[in-house]
Image 1 (tube, helix red, strand yellow):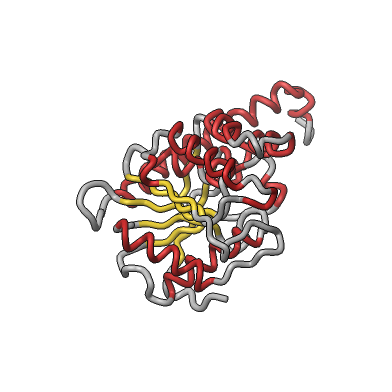
Image 2 (cartoon, rainbow, N blue to C red):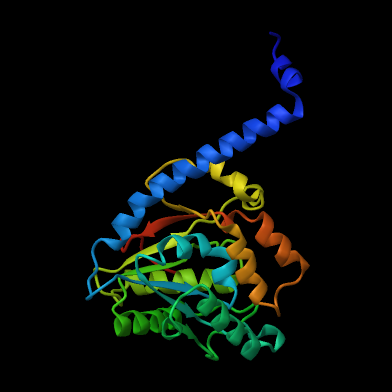
Length: 266
């Protein structure tokens, strides 16, 4: 058979079938690895009862756009807390967005008492707003110590989209970790940012997510991401609808641990 003749023989249906098979194999491969991560993350609670997990975000809707595979995989195994550092008031809709986030948190079956949205003049929503690492660190450390948090999940140093508020959250959490503001038992994980072509190939990115020690979670219910984002109705404009459909973060989260030795912060 001549090179490339298999493609001519199989045609588009065969190629599509190959992609579907590769996608399914990849999904189940990552899902199987996820079970190991679930056991590791939930197996050593430092407080009584289930482990206490904290997701730190910048704006209402970050949880739905970026972190749902993590939340959906672990919600039955731990108590999740969400700390949103701003109301997302750039367009004057802070109170509306705060209420939308509360609705989403309830619909996702998390307890209302584990959601905190700050309205702090130091943390204003905006593409030109850079939040001081020490201020973010103080807010995060206060929450962690008050609620006996075991693990923290947040953005990496690119913040998925490059938004300065996302990046500020990363450096603030890292500041808290590397400067001894958190209990030594607390582990911090950062959500991996990817190249733009991987970011927007949706579920297909699972094929390119290699098995590794990186914490990986896949979502088999992507419609939950769409439904959750739709509840942020003030933000659910056409390009965010497309984002939820085509973003890898609807289908897969990969996270790496941040170590105290990764000094120093900005």
